[in-house]
Length: 107
Image (cartoon, rainbow, N blue to C red; front, side, top):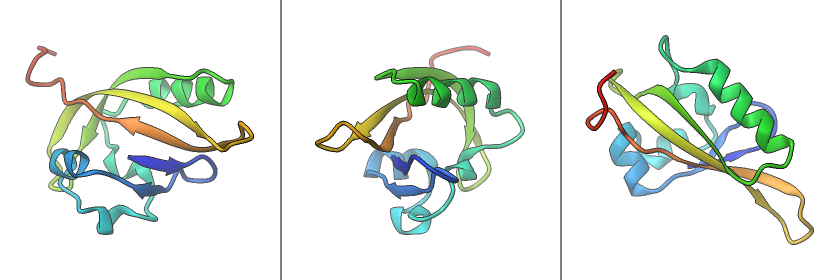
């Protein structure tokens, strides 16, 4: 998924793998807040820290969190995020890669 870097981190695009994992069609989430995947068990502290590190210039951050699908079911997510920059090096967007690790790890 790709999000804006300011404001609410609105989603600007996703791929079919993201749609299959999260249960949303791209047309349902474009322009919506990425917090749509968050809920009671989401690792908010870890997410805030990861985003802060991206703004500080790190090229890749990783965090384990719980996300929620459109139907409300949850999954354990190994989230990798990175910055997207324009030709001048200005931060323009974030890219996030979601990896469902719930089936591989006991919690």
